[in-house]
Length: 220
Image (cartoon, rainbow, N blue to C red; front, side, top):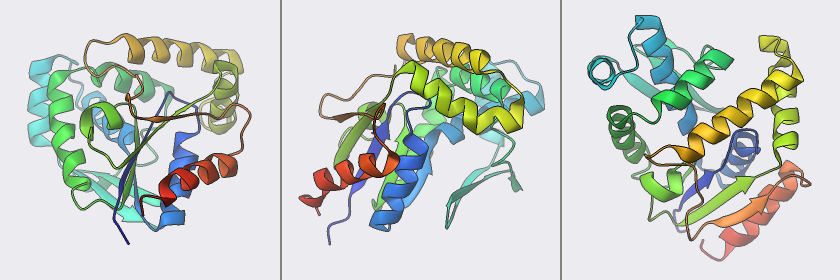
C-alpha cells in the first residue's frame, strides 16, 4: 500500500481536529495538530515572560525542547519533558499563538520540526499552511471551511466548561483570529491551489471523512 502525506488546512472551528483524527485512525496513520506546536511556543513565551519580538523568540526556540509523542487518541505534546497538552487550550494562548505564528523565527523553527515529523509519510497534518508552505508537495490536500456561526457554535461547546467564555465572546475572538490569520504577510490562511475544498457547515464529521476517503482511495 502506498504511503501518503495528507494535509488538512482551514480556519478555527471548521472541524479539522475531529476530522483529522478520524481520518488518521481510518487510514492507520499518525495525526499531527500543527496548531498545537504554535500554541506550545506561545505557552513557553508566556511562561518565560518574554516579549514576542524576533530576538527573544529566536533565543527561546534555541533553548526549548519540543516533542510530539504519538498516542492512541492523537499525540502528547511535551515541552522540556513536561506534558503541556492540556495547558495550551486557553483563549489567551490561542490569541498569543495567532500572533506568534506570524514571526519568521518561529515559523523557521517549526517548519523544520514539522517536515521531520512528516518525512516518512503515513501522516495527517492539520493546520493553516500545511498544503501551501510546509508540505507543498503533499500527496493529498484538503481545505475545510464552515460558516462563522457554525464554527463559533462548535468552539463554544468545546470551551464553555473550560474557559467560561460566552458564545458572543467566542465568536468575536474567532472573527479576530480569522482576520489575523488571513491577512498576515507570512503564510496567510489561504487554500492551496490544488486543495480539495470541503464546506462542513451542513455535514457531520463522518460525512466529511467519507468524502475525503473517496478522494484518497484512488491514490493508495
